[in-house]
View 1: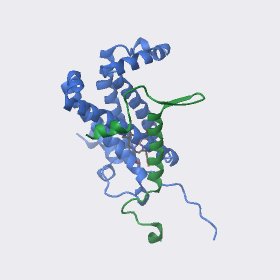
View 2: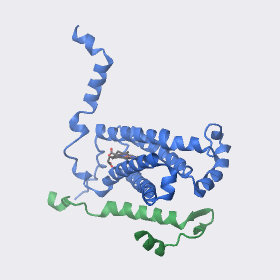
View 3: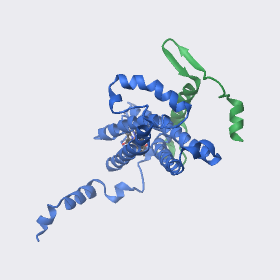
View 4: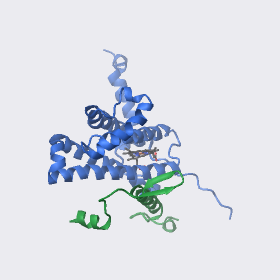
Length: 207
Length: 59
Ligand code: HEM
């Protein structure tokens, strides 16, 4: 078999493409440019770390079930861990996006990094919302009955029924977290592939 | 323990408190979080980052 025949395989082409766009030293770099030494760059990783705690505490809640998280001490604790890591997640994500907005971090072919960020933000809101209506308490009952008219008036109610507990729970623990995690992975890989956006050109002042 | 301390500080036993101004209607809890985000954002821009050399040294 000649080498050109092997080159035509999709596995070979994909490997070359990945190796070209994301070589190991770009994927896991040793150093970053000097301007990255600022607290504003910490918020992306804070968001990522909070997301990890959200997912892990969610796994424990899923293992044990609502009777456990509503009635036992440890259950309450893990439930709180899940809620408060979500609070930190959104808190950090909003500061992260403010930072990227004022840096115009979509410059230099990074528009898809920004756009995946926006879509992750919207997906996260939907994930949080389905979580609130899956609490199996009066709070979730109140939220879903308040939300139903608004959502039904858009027509989305025909396939997304906030009063359907089973459906909301599945969206919350399967579909939406899966989407959020995949989007986040793509987002971070894109940052690594492109490198951190350089600062605006400094104006040279006449002396 | 920390929970009861916090509960003593902010009573959550009752209806929420709302800030109302024209068409803006937002709970003080949410308003506080937004204010804290602005504070954290400004602090992130100006707080010195450990290990960063100052501009004078690099010149
Ligand atoms: C799950 C939510 C998110 C996670 C985990 C996340 C994570 C990250 C991380 C780790 C970085 C690199 C480090 C840094 O610059 O802070 C980054 C960069 C970036 N993020 Fe996010 N992010 C999220 C949401 C968002 C949102 C909502 C936006 C804007 C709408 C956004 C826009 C950007 C942009 C434009 C960059 C590239 C910065 C550059 O190239 O210098 N991200 N993100």
